[in-house]
Length: 267
View 1: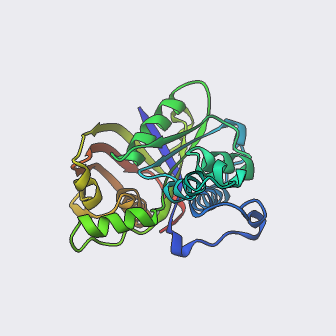
View 2: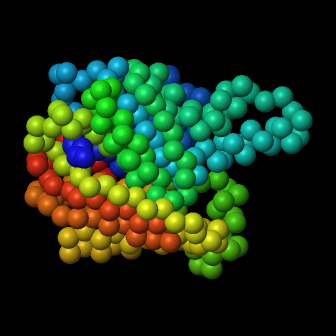
View 3: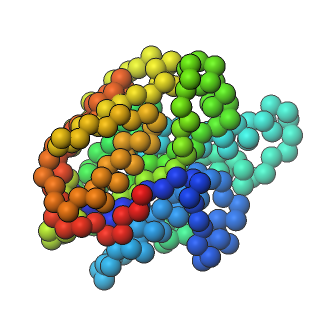
């Protein structure tokens, strides 16, 4: 099965700028939610689609750690037996970001959140592939969002000697239904995901390798593979190659064929 990638956005939390028309809707949102909504808005704004409909657009969001800091903030109130804001509780739920994307951007197709330490972006891509294979949505927003809690950062520093900084950020792709493919963007084919169980300490160390064409990139944080692919595709005028992501958490492979430059890829 094949999919067309027709638009993408990728940026770190430090580069997040919330557009004026989204500031009211995101005034109480945490970083995880704001990253997801702003990246989705960038992609949808950049793609010129006369026939695009939010009712025909699905959403699949993947993450390794999800809303971890917000969840701990909520649990602090529970442990201390204090009254907690209903908004804080709702933001601690894994599907919160998907709900915000739907309400802020009027995306009303099927929505799914995939939380997994092993290859969350590519597992989410599998789910998007399934959604677009049927008679339902014509498009799918595919995201990986990562923000990391203070507790996780502290624990990594104790367990992993000389550990690197994991930059919080987001990647968002807009995928097009196979039947609507018209030689635009990048064609994705032959996706295969093989997750593996990794020892918990190795999850905090985190190492993956990205192989495509003659490139070999060392990846050292959970969002790195999706970010590297997005940045690489933005630089490619032509491309027809296999891609492999390999690490202790598993292996993902697919084939990429660049048909035309992606729309407004940011990195």
